[in-house]
Image (tube, rainbow, N blue to C red; front, side, top):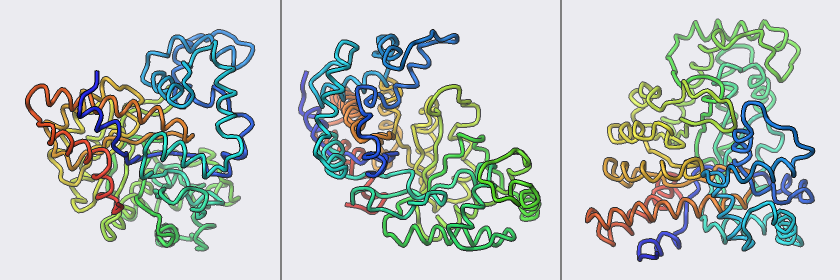
Amino acid sequence: MSSAIREFVMQQPLFSHHDHHVTFADFDKNRETYGAAALLGYAGADLTTAAGARPPSFENEEQRLAALWPNIRTTGYGRAVTLGCQALFGLEFAPEHFAQIGKAVQAAIKGKTAEELFDYFVREKANIKWVAQDGLFRPERPDALRTELYPDYYHFAFRSDALFGCTGMGAIHHLQRFSGIDVLNLDRLVDALNVAIDSFKSTGRLNAFKVGIAYQRDLVVLDPPRYEAERAFSRLRSTKTFRDGLQQNDGAVNAAEGRPLGDYMLHRLLERAHDEDIPVQIHTGYLAGNWGSLAGTKASFLIPLFDKYREVRFDIFHASWPWASELGTIAKNYPNVYPDMCWMWTMNPAECERALGEWLDGVPFNKIFAFGADTGQPWCDVGYALQARIGIARVLEQKIEAGYFSEATARDVAAAIMLQNGESFYGLG
């Protein structure tokens, strides 16, 4: 059933607060492999979950997808695939259509440049005006400064989780190479971090610092004295891994020993964010894939940072699901915390609707960010954006029906949370 607010929401451009899209070069490198399975995005993790503790054997991935897909077509991940497939190709994502879908994917990309295809999927079909991209601005990447590998409406977050997440040996070597600074002591490490940030900032496309340490450790960040960080740095310098210049972490320094250095360096990053008014994005809540521990991923663990750095703007990702109510409460109390629903519409759209309804009752709507696809392939944004729009429209219809919002207020809210808040926050528009 259509409504005026639904029609408005379905046409309103989006700000994608978080994506991991491949580069033009990587897209081109894999062109010939794209088929029906390329539309799955995060649904691949639900296939693993559906297979159970003792997964059956399959002859190939095609057989596995055909067997397990019916069990996940009802999840948020699965429904987004169905929405995207229908919107792009007019086909139901189902085993009997996989061959036809594969041909449709190849037909859609044939004869078009990667840049043209990004514009088609992201700008035209998903109606996304801006993308906050995570992945390029990392010191370990040889192409780290090549912003031409993305459209000009992409802006980038600096990220170095290994440095802050207590697995910093490889990160230190990468910072040495990238900055040209020989990291002989703690001060040199801070200098190397700042030089790297300067390099990314000089592109004019740096939009934030991203902290994704939840994949490596809990979010409890202490404020260690300098001598503890220096002691941890000295341990790293004395390991064979560091002396040999290897990139991987061989476990010679465990997380507990390295943690003071990670925490110390994270505080230096936040000081830079404060001094130059650079937003800080932080992953909270659910972790991608399977078997990830959620024990230390609550946004509430970050409250000491929110309190200490009151002039730093924190973009808190993924609604901290399954603790979305908790994040809404924090955002109401802390003016510097902005709750972000990126990825959550894909994970659990029903829970996201409930959270958005709560947040609109408790948090000024200029603080809420409603969308981020958080995906690797640009065509996945189509289904994810549709799923978000459907949910946003339902929540606003309910507010109007209850008498809480007028139509005009609902339109103002939709325009703000879907686009304008992001443009204001990141200085775009």
